[in-house]
Length: 162
Length: 162
DNA sequence: CTTTAACCTGAACCAAAGTTGAGGTCAACT
DNA sequence: AGTTGACCTCAACTTTGGTTCAGGTTAAAG
Image (tube, rainbow over all chains, first blue to last red):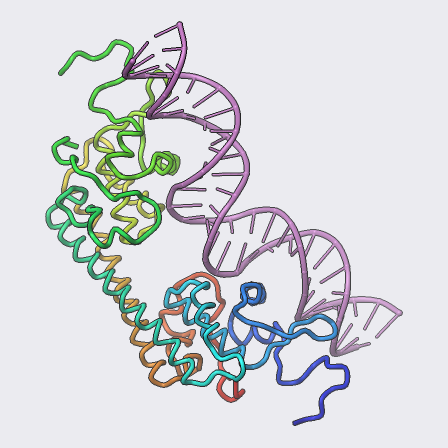
């Protein structure tokens, strides 16, 4: 409840983009980028400069942590959109949306572990490319992930003698 | 030892790009792409068409398996470059270079697990953005990975009341 | 001999997550 | 009043792993 400045230029206890950059450890260009993507928002001063609420610091922290966990920005944005718009998010809110990342992480760890085990088998048998190897089997559930190949591998390698 | 054709057009037991595509499950455009990147090689017929040795089938299988494990093409290429150039790679050769992926996979699983455990802590404490949280600590070894931020987070969030 | 399928090259385009640069404005200090 | 330094926008460029398209050639089948 301090005296508000008359021409709304500098509401003290808002952050400039530079402040936010320094304190979040994210570059200014990245903050602009996040804003274009709708992950954070700002008001503008009479001089068209951005001013962020302090709460934004926590949002940016969440974004960075999420990226570190391997979540794409689009998904992070979708999660942030589930936060209440009418009030400042609480610890409980953050806890809720973090839980989703935890589950995601679990799933990815499991998937990588399965992949590793298959790879171990393949190393053991020395084939690493054949129809009896799970890694190259298009009917394996793992084959569904990832962009690109129509199918992973096809029969007929072994008899060709390569 | 069948009779070789006089004008070298079709050495029977080489593969056309279409053959290779069908049998490896990789599109023709991707094969062209791999070749531009030096991951596979071909000879050309008198009519400028590609002909692949059967061995290439195994190379392509290795490429796809490696991608599935999450290795970038550049690294796959580097690994393939360590294969002997003077003879057809043996199962032992493939075993050797696959072992590197296995170790890589192990390391990534471990890293993700650590990340998950940190996240669990953060969910527990409800902070998910503060200096006492390992996930946002720039001095954490995990912070070294990934492109972009100069540092992950900085002190002073908590007292600001966001 | 003609038609069609497969092949060739090169250029343009896609997504993600930004960075870099040009050209211009705003704000604070001297 | 002038000079910094921080800010603004918009456009172009980066990397990775390809795809799609246009325009042209080759090869196999009828």
